[in-house]
Length: 68
Image 1 (cartoon, rainbow, N blue to C red):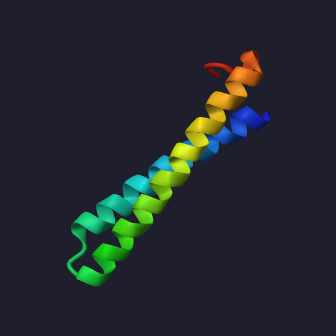
Image 2 (cartoon, one colour):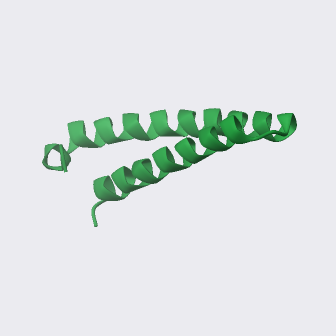
């Protein structure tokens, strides 16, 4: 598996985690837990953006990885 494939798979995983955390924040009755899930989802969102940027950089540097 190439580096680009690994980064893209990591992005898919991160998106799933972000979605689960958002769902937990929405469904939690405990305000403290709701805030913790929300804050963590925001942090994961930042990581997701960083990975998306890294994928663009990989595709720019190595065109054969584009779209795979």
